[in-house]
Length: 92
Image (cartoon, rainbow, N blue to C red):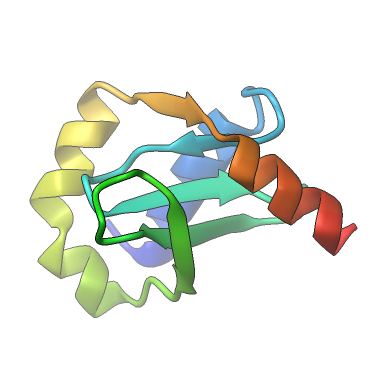
C-alpha cells in the first residue's frame, strides 16, 4: 500500500469521526483530519498520550510500520483528544 492509498483510507474513516478524534495507528503515532487532509503526529515519549510533533509519512516509514498499520486497519480504534481540539482551534 502506498502512502497515498493509506492516507485516503485513513481520511475516509476519520471524516466520519467527531472533530478532535485521532486514529490511534501505533503506540507512538496517531493521525487526525484537519478538515483538509490527514496529518500524522508522534505521541510524546513520556507515555501520557500527549501529542508531540507532526511527522511526514513517506513511503519508507509506511513500509517500516506496515505491520502496525495493518493491525490498525483490520481493527481501527480512535481517541477523542482535547489537546487536538485546542490545536485545531488555534490553527483556525
